[in-house]
Length: 218
Ligand SMILES: *[C@@H]1O[C@H](CO)[C@@H](O)[C@H](O)[C@H]1NC(C)=O
Ligand SMILES: [Ca+2]
Image (cartoon, rainbow, N blue to C red):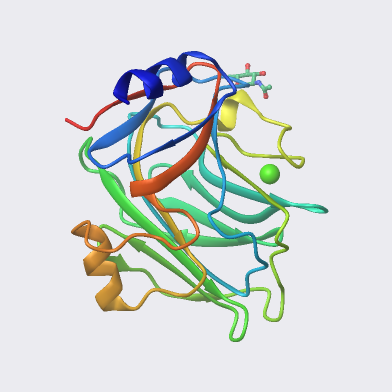
């Protein structure tokens, strides 16, 4: 079984399904093409969404962590970091700029972003801390035909990558829900007790493009 998965991973562009518990994606260097494409478990339009992930990097320039594009909106839902102290959450092209605590050490960071169409409320949580909330794109719906990419910023559906916005480092524990997580849920996610119903790290369907490696989380 392990061997089958390994063999699959060697054939670039092949869809894999894997329990990624205690594993990471390693993106060794900035690039215009390396990324991981994630396939949602359920194909449905979204009026609420939560995305959580962990990442580890030494980059000091901008980088995209999680890019969700739909037809006509390349930044339908985007988590984009601008070190040292800004994180942007885009909802249907609108930038929601969060001032966050500056990096003081090179360490894993747990990041969650949520959005609720009913209120427009956007939440950004980093390492369990909620930053002052924003309101964006009330009434918008994220179409079910979505393209989800880790480590690159899509400027068109499934492409339009810019090396200067690419991520290099490690990404783990990516989960996505069709509802907004509560404060209690956030704790459970951080402790690995809650997994997504749209993207589930314990049963991840993904495709590797280019130079990306699956390794144990150390
Ligand atoms: C990326 O950044 C480098 C250094 O700032 C610059 O020389 C280069 O033109 C940029 N490339 C693109 C595609 O923007
Ligand atoms: Ca974009």
